[in-house]
Image (cartoon, rainbow, N blue to C red; front, side, top):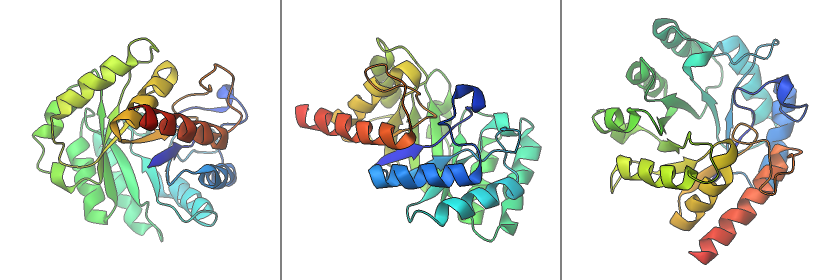
Length: 245
């Protein structure tokens, strides 16, 4: 599986190709799926371009994307969108009023209140992607969590952005998750580490993701023109890595 991460916390300063409105997100999602993406991760934005957990913001994004593509759509619950844990939990619970819920949502397990957020999502019937970031205690906390067997998948998220060391950091993170993680693993990197980690995922046969959240650049250093271009290149790189393993 190659998931497309449409925008992340990026904004207009990162370039016009980053989709920020529901319509732009839907168009970008449709092109990425046509290029081969089989799952979508998106950060709904306010009109000012800030990540939001408000159902008034999430609802139109889900509606627009689902009108264009048939694949699962997930959203973020990152603390940067709502720093106060209690307010963040209240926002998640307010999603019950949405006519259409996300298929899944990512929960960063190192963030305060992660267990409560994950529990609220599961109560709503929303799948949980357990975000386990390198350089944090998330793997230890997740290993002790009674919710571990109930999550949809584990996001092994390599925060090391160095092209030279990201693969080693990824291997260490996978080791921290243990020899037999309780759920499927999606491995991905960021910025300079995005492509080395994606190729490692290919060699290991793990799901992965690619998109403008993770990198603005193609493997050759050229600026990416779209999520679709990144997905097409990701599938090529992933396939080559699999064949060489």
